[in-house]
View 1 (tube, rainbow, N blue to C red):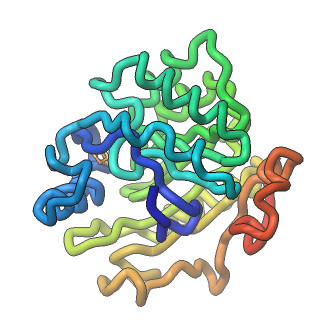
View 2 (view 1 turned 30 degrees about the vertical axis):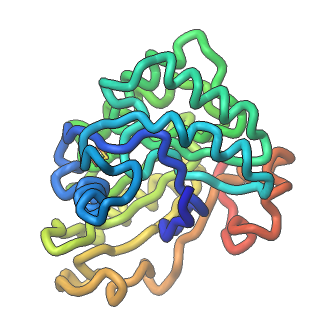
Length: 265
Ligand code: SF4
């Protein structure tokens, strides 16, 4: 487990690492760059570089941690990768079930595999499920799949936002996170694309979180991610779903959620 610099989580837990690219959002995959770097450094777990690899020794890590923590599961992989055996997914969700003190955020681009896996199964209350929506063609159909899954919180990671998403049906969605791409090859994100999403979140009562501009600023100029910051119209958008503050999450009070505002259903 590792402390995360991602704005909307606390720690990462990677019971698998490595992945295979499948849509335009993957073009400059951060996990791939990191995995190759960690392999070159001889870091344990990255012996296969970016090849999809199960790491069963890491399965029990969350159970051993008592302090309530928000985990981003598989920041270095995609949990619903084609090569992950169903029996391994069963073990991961068993760990989640046995760790009620924690919250687990799971984000995938393999939305169909996720909805098929949960068909007829209960999703643990402390598992938030999300899909990446980088464009209309690949991203919007994932929302339909996500809606089929009975998670307590369903979220969208609209990062990297590559084009206008147009009209989005946010029925059954609790949280939308938007961000631009970072890194030397980052693709630009236009402010009007973000405004369209924010407006629809407002109209459909969904929490809106603006993570970052990334490599291109609000003024359309390319510069370092840190310099571009994460303000939109002079404001930081740190909404998290109201439901996240329910009884189940009281234990995280004093933790990261205190600095955020609530919105949505
Ligand atoms: S699905 Fe995620 S981890 Fe896998 S290649 Fe695409 S961006 Fe990288």
